[in-house]
Amino acid sequence: MEEKPNVTINKIPGVGSEQPEPGSASHAAQQRQRASQLAQAVRGELQKALIGQNNVIDDVLTALIAGGHVLLEGVPGLGKTLLVRALARCFGGEFARIQFTPDLMPSDVTGHAVYDLHTEQFKLRKGPLFTNLLLADEINRAPAKTQAALLEAMQERQVTLEGRALPIAQPFMVLATQNPIEQEGTYPLPEAELDRFMLKVRMDYPDADQELNMVRQVSRSTRADMLDVQPLRTVLQAKDVQALQRIASDLPLDDQVLDYAVRLARSTRTWPGLTLGAGPRASIALVRCARARALLRGGEFVIPDDIKGCALAVLRHRVRVAPELDIEGLQVDQVLQQLLDQVPAPRL
Image 1 (cartoon, rainbow, N blue to C red):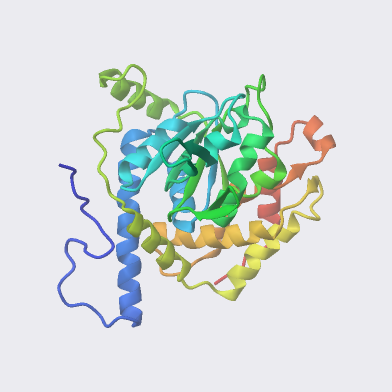
Image 2: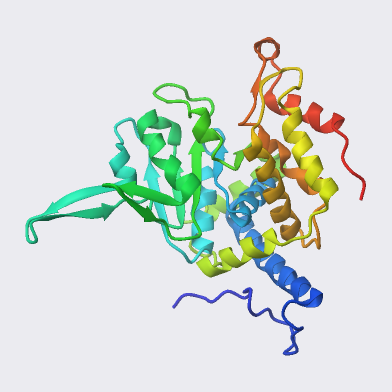
């Protein structure tokens, strides 16, 4: 029998039977507190499976709460797939995985019509895209026409099959992985698809102490070279994710903070060293992610640091570094960090 989560939106240990009146300020504050505890409970479970990647875990949870998609980039062996499997273990909704390969067809992702000999009619067979949590493993291994099968689902939360628009159950989140150093047999993601990912999260090597701890734990595991996600508890249900998203979207946001997010996105369009700037979708993503980060840290409202904390992950795949800076070895994160340092943040 599956172990029940300790924390839910509706009931948290230690909260008395007296509840504030719905719609009141105290009721909203209590809802935010409950949501924050639930999000932190998920974070705690993920940290058991993925060692030395706390910032990455926070970024993925931020996208989940903000209702966006994530592109995970890192060299082999850092735990990209492990992170998604661990999140799926903590999530009680539906999970599907697609291993992208050069021969993968769009119909393998979305589904197709099949002829039923008994009824002598065509019927739709839905593909793995119809799920709550989708792992698109090594997404850049498939050609552009297969990658494009995700576009409608990522933006509109629906899939058109045989002329029918079929809705995808909510919540829906795509977590795609790619290897930045292996270019043989890969297909770069088009700009239109990159822009649909709310965050591009880069996984780096853990530090020495964290790697030592990881090796110690993995060597005790029954699995050959990775931690087992089976002991993780199921903390989230689909309705809980939707509740988190709703509560985060209602977090107070000062107009000065909103203006700061828009100024950051607009600055990329005229910043020296960037030949391609971020569009309005980046401004929206900055605000949505900032609200999610505020909820994750247990804040009562959004502060400029919440915008700053997610800015690199929101912007790095939406801008392009000028060729002369690229030749000098200047990375996109370095250029964006200069922008963040020079665009003034409001003081609240």
